[in-house]
Structures are given as structure tokens and as C-alpha cells.
Length: 287
Image 1 (cartoon, rainbow, N blue to C red):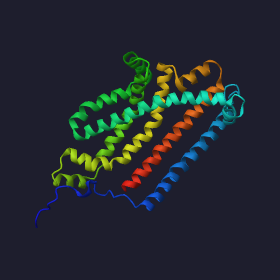
Image 2: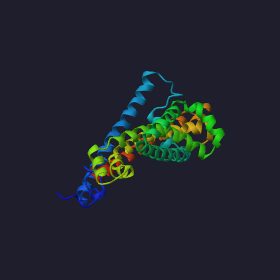
Image 3: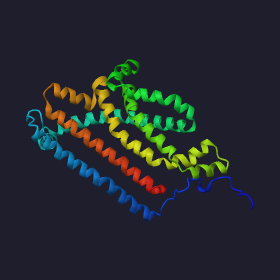
């Protein structure tokens, strides 16, 4: 039997990855994916509101300090000064979003690059993974002053802090995803003359898309926590600083409103990443 003349895997996709669906089918799957992601988010928000109210009642938190959801809603929307209150809270949230976004993107990109290098070179992984583990084991509170000394109190320091928080969990998840590729698909690329880079591009990366999105979802709250920490300890602006100054000034409703808005925004971005994941996975036939 003569050998095949085509030296490339068909379509350039990993085996088991189906081509995109037709327009109507994909549209239905997209709507179903959005519904699947939004329903748990709505349930989570409802549970948070219930637990918030129950916590204040069960532990007898004084009304001066503990504000319930209605108090926050009233402060944000029903008082004569609500417009100014919203502008203040949302302005701080915008600053925090920029701070968190820089660390989020930097951390994910660095993790994706490092994971790709690690799966291509086991010696490099054995040499560098302990450094990443050490970096993760150092408390962020202890590391922040050193980062501030090295990078100042601007966006660079905020990005570094956020990237450190996002990087390690994303790295572990992405390495696991890249290594979970089908060995049959890997061998097929090798048989057709593909090298390590070809196996990475044609098999590992497409197969690891769900793992990449899992890392992206986990990175959303991590990036937000890193941004708030940077604002508390370094920049002196944004929602993190607003919470600290509000508590120090006995403006507890302001603190609760900031926490509520930050939490809601974090949940919304988490859900958005999940929706994008569902659409991409469905389009690639990985669901």
C-alpha cells in the first residue's frame, strides 16, 4: 500500500475537534449557553443577598456598622444624594477595573507563555516551576512593599501585583490542560512529520481551550483581589482605598456600597467569561 502523499493532518485541527456548526444551530447553542451561564449567576446573587441579611441578624451586628441590602439600595438609588453617591462608587470601581484588568491580562498571558514553554521543555519546567511555587507561597502583603519600592506606586506596580495573584493558578491549570491532549492525535502529527511546535499548535492548544477558559474564570476574582490589595497598600486610589477610608471615617454605608458594587461587578465579569467560553467551546465542537 502506498504511503499517503499529504504530510499534514486534515484541516489543521486536533482529532475529535469538529468544524463549526451551521449558523442556525450555533445561534441556538449560543442562546442555550448564555442561559446556562446566567441562571447559576442569578441563583448565586440571590444566595449572597440571603446570607448577607441572615448574617447581620444572626450575629446581631449593630445597625450603625452592618448595613443590609436595602440600606445599600437606598443609598445608591433612593436618596437625594444618590446620584453623587453612585458617581463616587462607580468612579472608584472604574479605577479598580483598570488596575485589575492590567494584572488579569498580564497574568494570563504570562501563564499561557510559561505553560507552552513548560510542555515543550521538561527540563525548563523542572528548573522554573519551583520558582513559581516560591513566588506563590510568599504572602502578598509581605511582597507588596518590595514591589512598590521596585516599580513605584503607579499602574506598573498594580499590574505586577495583580499578575502575581493570577499567574500561578492559571499556570497550573494551563499546563494540565496542555498535557491532557489525546496521545493518538499527538502521534498522528508526529507520523506526518510534525515537531514539538506543530504538536503544540495543532493538538495541544485546541484541546486545552477549556482549561484556558477555566484559568480565565478563576483569574477574575484573583485579579480583583490583587487590585484591591494594591490600592490598599500602594496606590491610594480606587475601591480598595475607598473601603479603608470609609471605615476609618465611620462611613459604613459607603464601605458596604463599595463592597456590593465590586462583588456584583466581579460576578458579572466571571459570568461574561463563562458565556464567551461556552460560545467558543460550542463553535469549536469541544462541548
